Amino acid sequence: MNVISAIKSLEFDEGKHVMTRRGPRVVRQASPTDEFWRAWRQDKDKMKDMGYSVSKVGDKWVVEHWAEPVISREAVQASRAKDSDMHIPLPEGVTLYPYQRAGVAYAVLHGGRVLIADEMGLGKTAQAIAAANCLKPNSVLVICPASLRENWRREWQRFATLPMPIHVGKRDIPQGSACWIVSYEDAMAIDWSEHSYEMVIIDEAHYIKNRKAQRSEVVRALCQRAQYVLLLTGTPVLNRPAELWHLLHCLDPKTWKNFHAFGLRYCGAQETRWGWDYSGASNLRELQDILRSRYMVRRAKDEVLGELPPKVRSYILLQADAEVREALEALRKAYDEAGGDLDQLRLQAARVEFAEIARARADIGAWKARMIAPRIVEMIAEQEVSKLVVFAHHHEAVEVIRDALEKAGIAHAVITGETAPEVRQAEVDRFQDAPACKVFVGTIKAAGVGLTLTAASTVVMVEQDWTPANMQQAEDRCHRIGQRDSVHVINVVVDGTVDARIAELLRQKMEVIEKVAA
Image (cartoon, rainbow, N blue to C red):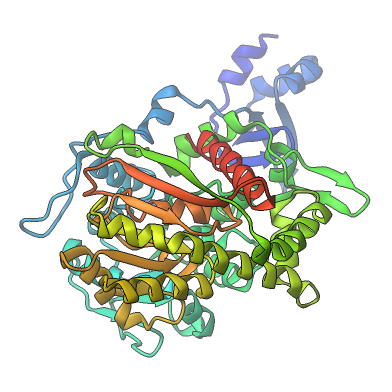
């Protein structure tokens, strides 16, 4: 009996993608023919080895075929495309960069459920809105950090062609077709049983990387009910491949329904005495190919913007004195007890019983700010730079820098977690547009995401955030569209101490993230 002929007699469906411990598979089904039954009786073992099986579903027999998906180089390269001839509706006078047109085309051709993961500063918001123009949903929900709601309103007004009103915040509840822009905090407070949206856009989607977090659960439910889902983040890999799973689950819950299977395949999962450890990485090339061929469009800045120069990182090394040695010693002990693991150190610093760590870190930051403040003033006073961006982790460090600038009579803008949302954009606009405003000072968490600070090409990181993705986000406030100079990132480090060891570890982690996401 000719097995090949018997297989050709079957009429398979299009199939579905599933995730197994051995990686992704495509499962197709067909009704068995008489020719297939004859071959099955004679060469069952051979056909099983070829990936075929027979089972009864209800009162009908079904043939299933399990195979590895075929991923073409063309499909992978489509996620790096730099232009498209697709017609994209835009308001009169508004244009997209060629690579942005390609990103919109990718989103549309992949069913409107994709991860737009271009590097920071490449205009993911514009691509998402343009994709909405093409897909024409009757309602759109945007979930973003509270500080970016006004930016989203501005961008929607600029790029959207859909005839729908804009509503912002949980109290501005729309009726009927609308674009509703809410923060993550808003999203957790709203009763979504009375609202449904055809398109859901999640900005800074790495906020939902933790599959167990409440906001992740809220977003997941909204995505499952939507026809179109656009996830936006410049750092999809973050610190571990495990943090990608929930984003994929929101896009395609049928394929990525089992986190453990994902962990075994791509996170180097290992069972320990404390349970399963998913903090590793494995089969990354396979994962990247799957992402790029089916879910993710990602272009690096140097691939699409010839005028955007690379970043240059350097360090200013401070010498510890008696004032800061006690705090450095406390941090060193905590670092050693955490085994040099920044994630563990960060968790300890957030717990009440380890308040000494948090206090030591804040004291070190304030001391570094006092040490570097004269140099910051000098850089402006001596016109070494026309404008400057300064980031710190703690409010105490920001206050030190602000006091020094005020005493020197240098005009500056400030954004911290205490800055009111309605004031944030005014501070950004003043720094960007007013020649007299020379310095922008902000905390990494409050000002390191979503803002455009391209008026400066020099960034001073007074303190390092212990999450490398947050450091990249902060750096890229200057390294964005419109920047015409090489961006110089200066890291302030206490030489020969645990502060320097942490800075070096962060540098290594950032390089790993950049390589994995490449």
